Structure formats: C-alpha cells, structure tokens
Length: 141
Ligand code: FES
Image (cartoon, rainbow, N blue to C red; front, side, top):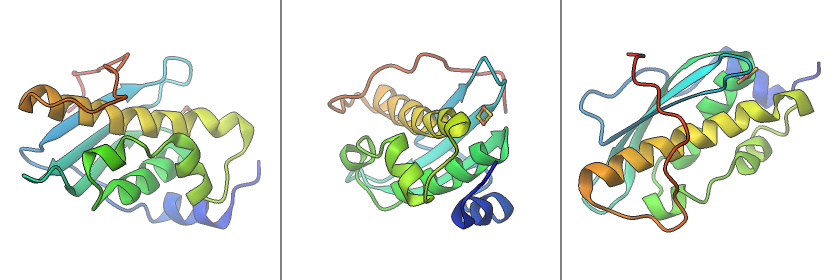
C-alpha cells in the first residue's frame, strides 16, 4: 500500500495528540469492522470559534494521520465552518489515501461531528446540517 509523504508525516509525527480538560465538546466514534476508535476534544470560545482541538486514536496509521489533519483543519474555524470540513477535504489535505483507507478519513469527520454535537447539546445550539452521531462510545477515557 502506498501512502503519500503527508500521510506518513502525520502518522509519524501526529499533531494535537492528547486530551483537553473540561473540553467544550467531546466526540467518540468507532468503526465496527476494523475496531478502530477515535476520540476528539474541542475547545470552543464564546464566538463559536474552535481555539483548540486534540485527539486520541486507537487505530491504524491512516486513522492517526486523518485525526491529526482533521484537528489541524478545524482549529481557528467557527463551528459552522468546521461542519463543512468533510472526509474528502481531510484526504485532499493529506494528498490522498488508498481506497481501503477511505473509511479512516470518514471516522475523523464523524469524530469532529460528534464533538460538535456534544458542544451543541451542552450549549443549546444548532448547527445546520449536523446530525446526531450514529455511535457514541463513552467507555473510553
Ligand atoms: Fe479502520 Fe483505519 S483501518 S480506521
């Protein structure tokens, strides 16, 4: 399997690994087929701007690279802008992924969405186009 240099870079030196204490929104998603799990933490200010994002991913190299890139892409964005960052945008920013690894980028998109959903729920907000996450796995710390 061929990975782009950018995927390798974000796999070897992922950005934003870790967690945020008292995060504004937390999203945990998993893929039942491969068993990989991603948890995303977002800090969102009073103007609905994401000022910090971190992640913990128990998964494959592409899952780590896409979590790293997705958290980079949402930082500094408003929640309305962040919702528009699709798995395709994450893949493009990484110069592509092999076809069998496309679902890893979907997991990254879902994890961001789940964290945004959590934020909205806690703050009584609505983001147009944001749907309730299919899966929310709470047992992972
Ligand atoms: Fe499932 Fe990468 S193999 S997230």
